[in-house]
Length: 429
Image (cartoon, rainbow, N blue to C red; front, side, top):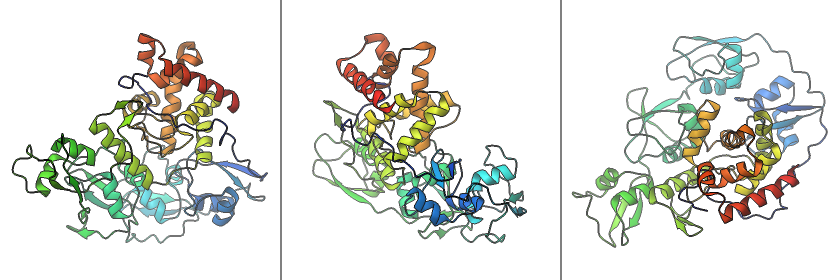
């Protein structure tokens, strides 16, 4: 494969073709519930008259009761009829509030708040606005002392380092602030910090909070290094490194020199070479940032991710067997997979292709979020299949890039990829 021009993927995990192909069969419970955007296990349990612990045990959820939109939950006998909701309460939006923070405070979901207030898909709220809180919310209507704070991005910051300092998640920060690509934030950008962040905040003016500096790391300069290359590798800037090391001329560094890297992001999580091709330092640096981010996030299990791919394919009119075969070939249903060329998640979509997929579905997609990753991959498959394109040609386009396939035909490794995916499709039927 010509990896310089490959449009959509760059690495396939080498896995045994027979491993992890079957979903775990669920017991025969009275009701199958599909998780909606904004749902929480607490809200689902309350709405169906069962306990959180029962849902967790029945569905083998983790200790945090992690669920995701599109996931199927089995609810025990007797839970099929939702409990009648009590009359909704009213809450007046205060400074610093977000819909997510309000939903958390009142033990409900963003989706339930949107429905109760006729907000469609909007999450925009105004200070002084009266919101109806769905019945059953147990929290006090008094303003919360864990109200979301604001942080202004500093030189050398990454979303990963900010999340680590606050004891929160990159996914939470990205979703709360509408950050489409968590590896791209800018100096002086204000970020809303989720309520309940555990790290201490140093108040500066009553509404804006400053964070303690991220622990720095040390790097020894090797032959061929440049400061810009080092900065890219660590997800920071030349000026930040120059300032941290009191450098008067950032263009001069010497082999063996020890540099302090402010807010350094771990390296070595993703290699820089695959199939004989070495990727640019900035691409590999971004891949390392994204890998560190995914390692710090809660992601679905492989079985859960497989089900998410199935549900997404069904919803978007794509053959679920094809979507599963691609996902298995690319990552083995591993949402934490990141390639040397910064192909991300279960469907192994690179950021530029993610932008293309965002245009196809009409909304920004965050490839680090499981649902968005599945949506991006399936949307690309759907586009590649347009106008009656043969399935084999669409598969080749996913691997090699549609334009490359048109101009050059199939590379030898592309033919092997297509054959493997077609074989897997038969097993997922």
